[in-house]
Image (tube, rainbow, N blue to C red):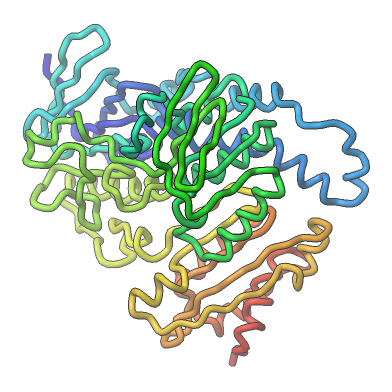
Length: 472
């Protein structure tokens, strides 16, 4: 059985859905091939369930830090209700709603495992074991995402460790948990499980959150310790062993016993069994692409989202999907391609203006380059820091509010290259920084973006004042 479409998308997560949707809006036909749940990792095992687990204890902590509300807090976190709320957001791990959305968007769905089997050709092994061959008139987009990486630590795989999927979908909270890693997943899950009642130990080879400004990782380490987490940095994990009572994790600084161990040491592209070898690419590796997300040397193959290794964030994958879906439609119709920097069909922000929020305690929100990254890139920069204690809105937001903000200024062009905020509830502030960085708004113009008083957004005024440059 052979079916023909303008576009075939391998992977039905948010990235694949958006590639298909943009192409259909551009007048093409599209089919998604998905072997698991439509909606993908983010909807069922990552962004959504993890933030649902984190939000309930975060709301409780927020109330506990405001006089008047704090006195009303007479109970503790309801763990069962927190887990039930998470289950509601994942629709109990069913994708009926996402499937209905595909139908409403005029995107077809084929269930099964899809593999490239030649140029513009995908062979799908369906759930009943039969094969179905799909061919593409114009393009195939690989949006298969990534899996949790499990490092070659002796005994780790044999110990049946948790990955992020297990941590976000657990039905019960273990009495104790060892987290191996110091990145976003490690920090967020340590925050969640400590808040849900587990005794948590974090083992990190270096500091926490190594891709953001160092002060942010230090504040998060302090916040974890306030939650009772045993944070051990500069520690190498040597081996892991499981017995009937739990796991033993041996490090170069001693042993740790716990009921469960979570490995949170990064991601690996989900490209090992999708037929890359049939089109001259190496399985198991990230798929290199150009700025329009097309594989160099091909006029039909695209790789979008985590699988291309550019930026492993859902929102950035969806941004890539918009560019890819639009350019696939434009090329199919013979229209002009706008692939210059910041053009409609170019994923320029992947390099210069990536926003990210770490939902830790305190939160960390950042966009663009850190001071060190900007210097490595050859920019002449100045970093400016302010404490949130100087912001009236922060003091009103929470008693004893602690946090810090930094902006990194390109001294030659007088524009922002990066912004980092660390403190309770800073997530909603970062998009202002994303606009300033992506728009390359001159500092003299930013003086005219007046923050409302008394809000936490006043931090932008404090940063400009600390820089000391007035508008003309």
